[in-house]
Length: 256
Length: 240
Image (cartoon, one colour):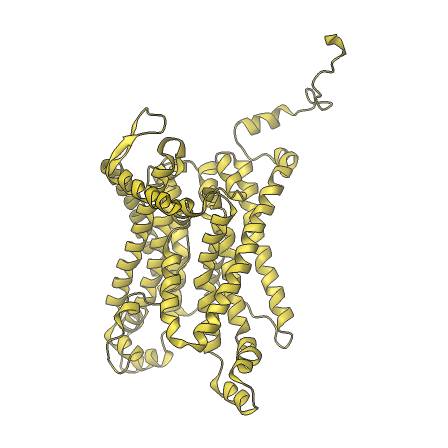
């Protein structure tokens, strides 16, 4: 009996995504594909803009610092500090001190996305075998060539690992953007009085699916940018790995 | 008759001693040190609820992930599936997971704890298996040569050798859990997040509740470091 009731909750949550219905107070129509489509679109726009800015800032700095091999403490401890600050507090802080709106939320998400990308770009570049770099120099590579043709390709999988972590974080955190008046998929979650438990559950399902898709998609990109030589080094026999669990490669994620 | 009834008690000086500037500050939702000092006690219960959520889920999460880590170390084929499952759990946003659990476990601490425990799994599990794998094989061989059974080798040699890595995982899990617990109010479990959310535009409120969460994360971090020193007297604690 209770099992059926639980199942029913999830079934009606799915219905909520596709068909609109009256709000709890019966005053407006809520749910349905049109509303969820609009919320999802804003959600993705906000996430994409924030992630793109964070990548543009953090990747060059991380690679440069990693190339120099200095400021390790800075590059690594930034992400440790970032983890300790709750995102809700960060957003609330911005709402209270800076203001609401798309730009402000995007700024928070950029701040949130930078640490994993910066750390991974740093670590990826700094971990390149010094002997490899030396032999490239010995072959007459210029400093710029060492960076673009040796260090960068070897670091790419790690860099994309950082981007993947941040993408998942940003999509997850964009859920609380409605507190700052940006209408993302958090709207049905936060406005319980209008959307009810079914609307909350429906939005939670959509958010969860988007993050899982995002993670899987960027995981595919991460594998695609891994240089052939590195793949061979990790798996010298060249035999294909078992598919099922090979789909989910190791990475450093951070729950959000 | 009515003259005998006492009027509602008002603290002495209530009408006279309030600083008008202070009232203004609160009305504007500003950062008001006086208000904070006066109202600090309203954060005590949410703070301890937050501590409860964090510490209990870390303890349960560590017990499960540590056991799974030992199991996966003995049965290597389990490592892949367990990593895959914990990775997926880890990727689902916490708000979504809290809400997805509501139909199953209802509003309250149980739902919050289940989700928070789920998020500790990947971090601790991965650090336990990595730590155990990095123990030099010479040392394991030597233990075997001295007549230790595989179980004794695991518990007396490999686990102590892997402790720095294992506890580094616990530290990461601790600060992560403090942050995630601020969203536990979506599961109806209160905590500091509920305070932040209740007056999200009021600067004093946001600073105090958010600040307490950061302090809690720092305190837990130091506590695990202390534990590390206590458990490994033969070795100075290394920063994670």
